[in-house]
Length: 317
Ligand code: ZN
Image 1 (cartoon, rainbow, N blue to C red):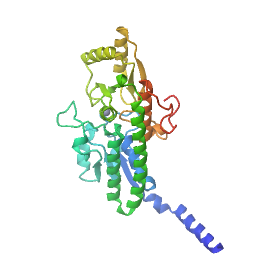
Image 2: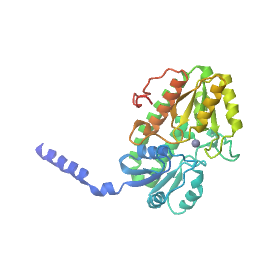
Image 3: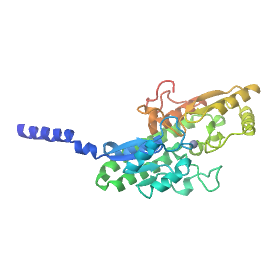
């Protein structure tokens, strides 16, 4: 008994002390916070993930910095979204793909689940993370990419992915239930840019963005005045700002409606193309969507727990 206990301690000490193991973590670089989160969830202890785009960063406009380029050229695996989300980085990734292992994780989604893109006839709406069911397919792609990179860790990646996918399934259930509590006539979601199309389809909301699917298009005065009329007609009570897009246009709408005698409040700040602060619940994919769903349902007259699906949202978010 004594002997085996000692043996156990020796083995445990060896595992803890193994510096080689730590140095051999796979190095993964991901563009958006959502993809970085998927890589962390699936890779667990076996990966070291660097996300290029932090809180409040707009992926449509982002260009790689010199530090990013160094990190990507040294990485074992580079994950980007694709579907023209990182519009300014497309050429860079196509070149990098000749030298490094590079995967566009959303490019492989079946075309029949994708929505068209108003701004470009031959492209799709990239904001698939807004529907947890679609995001599950991306998480599976991240899992498969990691397995391809390190087949000997397949069991670990599969187990981690299964646990994360179960959590996303729970999130999907919570979102459907939460959105169903919003009165039917209030199911209008107006945000700074068209990031919520998949969200609208998943939960039966009419979705309007002031700017198009990309933040790179400017909203004209005509667009603003058409939207003001619609908000007044429909008696929409709340519209939303986004953490990664300027709220200038949202304020113009509120002022425009006020001039016509209709008061609109800001329903809250949503995470559209970037997550919350790293290290917080809102800085994870599940927390980001939980936040959005809870804020939207609450602002539009639904009935949801104040602190979300698992009571983890920061107070007042
Ligand atoms: Zn966007």
